[in-house]
Amino acid sequence: MNHPENLSQQGRHLLNRRHFLGTAGLSTAGLALAGLLQADGLLAKEPLTAGGKTPIRPDIDPGNPYASRKAHFEVPAQQVLVIYCPGAVSHVDTFDYKPELFKYDEQKPPGIPAVTFEGPTGNIAKPFWKFKPRGETGKMVSGLLPHLAEQVDDFCFFHALTTETSAHPQGENFMNTGFTMEGFPSFGAWVTYALGTENQELPAFVAINDPRGLARSGKNNFGNGFLPAAFQGTDFTAKNPPNNLHRPASLSPRADRRTADLLERLNAQHLEQYPGDADLAGRIASYELAGRMQTSVPDVMDLSGETQATLEAYGVEGGSELRGHYARNCLLARRLLEKGVRVVQLFNGSDPSGGNGITNWDSHSDIAKTHAMQAEIMDQPTAALIADLKQRGMLDHTLVVWATEFGRMPFLQANGTGRDHNPDAFTCFLTGAGVKRGFSYGESDEFGFKSVADKTTVYDFNATLLHLMGLDHERLTYYHNGLERRLTNVHGHVVHDVLEKHAS
Image (tube, rainbow, N blue to C red):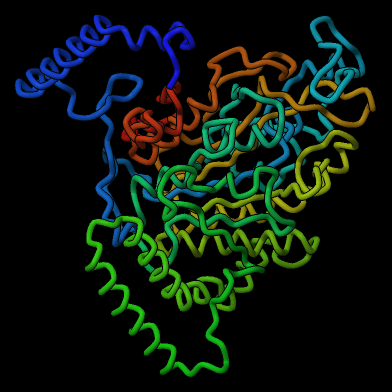
């Protein structure tokens, strides 16, 4: 046993009788006060959000976590399609027209930094594709995306978006999860956690990866983070369905059905022994959904019933092989939405080995060639998907989001052929349920370098998306590690200017 003289000052302090009795007395008084406050109903019944609001927690049945749930308030949007372009699409070469770039082409005006993300800067470069007015609104759009350009009267552009990082993994995380670090729930996970889904035969949230593979942040872009595992995205493509869908040839249909029935009885008996085990109930529910997917997924992936006109409109044939695969993914996205899947996230671009314009939009060199490659894959199928949704009346209840993680610089890199990352100004657009059509919000400066009017953070963007889905971004929370976590952290404001009046 240690003698007092061998103890630290803190240790001797803990052995002090008067200190011990004083601390014990204060603790007892504190417990008594808490009891009195509780009896008078003056204690908060549950933790409040960072903004002092009461959280709205979805009422989730562990045995059926995918059941459809009501939104916080009524809105037209019931489903959401996110079209995500990893690698950072150049806003100054697509949707953000800047005449000053022509005036200062091949010059280096004052205010241009000497070094950016990947090194020394070069001169201002005019757009690599010609801009011209499109649609009845006369919106200036470049020739890089001619099919999407035809639809600008239906789009709502955000031209003054900003982000907190200029690195791709962190940028993808921030746009898709609200945090630059990994381990946080994705936008799709938050929506399905809140709303569930209408179709109990298919996953509530499906992620359709690019034909070339996963984006830089991989499954984190559609992960559940600390939310229950039931709300993570299920990823498959038109070319690669989920594994183990088909019954082995050695197993007859009758034997397969009897096996499934036996498992259902055994699971029910097991659950009766542990009625309060939400994790067990959730696992059983996920296995039961997997069983139903053995018949529902092959049906939704069967494109044989699509007309030749539809296949041609999407560009399934006649272009590059990658465009054909991506076009089929776009058709799959529409079919999933038709079946009532709540969230579909469609990726155009991957990053298995750095990308650099070959597998995604990250054009640090030869942007004229590499952006053109990606546009050939993305433009026609994406435009056809949006047009198809509109023609079928699905945009009345579907929100469509086209996004990328940041923009690109108005000047070239020192190599003279590529544009570096730009976190201070970039463009995304929305269309569909609850969104103004033919509208542009925010402005970047005369070069497209910095956001200068109606600057919009990613927090604001995500807050607006949740609002369009009928969800209060400040009250949709999940208690985790002592904090009321939310998609927008402790930031974000809904951009009401982009909403149709009935969605405000």
